[in-house]
Amino acid sequence: MLPIRTILFGADFSKHSEHAFALAAALARDYSARLIIAHVRELPAVAVGEFGAAPALGEDLDDAKARLFAIKPAEATVAVEHVLVTGTPAVDLLELSETHHADLIVVGSHGRTGLARLLMGSVAERIVRGAKCPVLVVKQPLAEPAPAPLEKAEVQPAAAERSAR
Image (cartoon, rainbow, N blue to C red):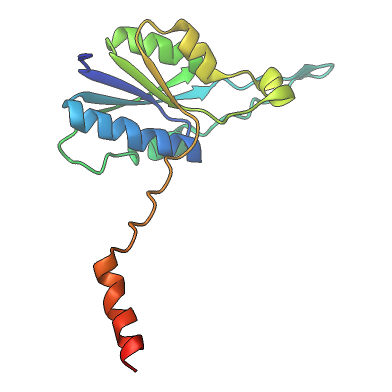
C-alpha cells in the first residue's frame, strides 16, 4: 500500500476545486494524513504602454485569505494546514509539494480543450509533468449514486391490494 502521510490540495475556488477537495479530505481522513490546503494568487500581468504602466489588478489578498481559510474538511479529525502564496500556480504548488514532503497532490481540472487550453495552459498538466509524487486530477464531480432498486417484497403488497379489489 502507498504510504500517504501528507496530501497537498491546490485550491482555485472553482466548482471543480470543490469536488477535488471533497476527495482530498476523504483521502486524508482514510489515511490519517495531514492535509495542506494551498492557494496560489497569480501574479497579475502588468500592461505597459506609451503612457506608463497600468495598475495591475489581481486577486484581493484579504478575499483570498478568507476564501482559503473557509475551506475545511467535514471531518474535524483531519489535520489541516492552510497556505497562501503569490506566484505561478503550477510552479508554486510543485515547490510546496517539495517543501512539505507531499506524498500526494490533489487538484481539480477545468477540462478545457482546444484553443482555450492552448491559450490558458493547463495547471494540472504542468503539475502532473513536474511532480515527484503521485498526482490525482479530478476532472468532474463524482457521480451521484443511483437509487437502490425496490425489492420484490416491497412491490408485492401493493400488487396484492390491487388484485384483491
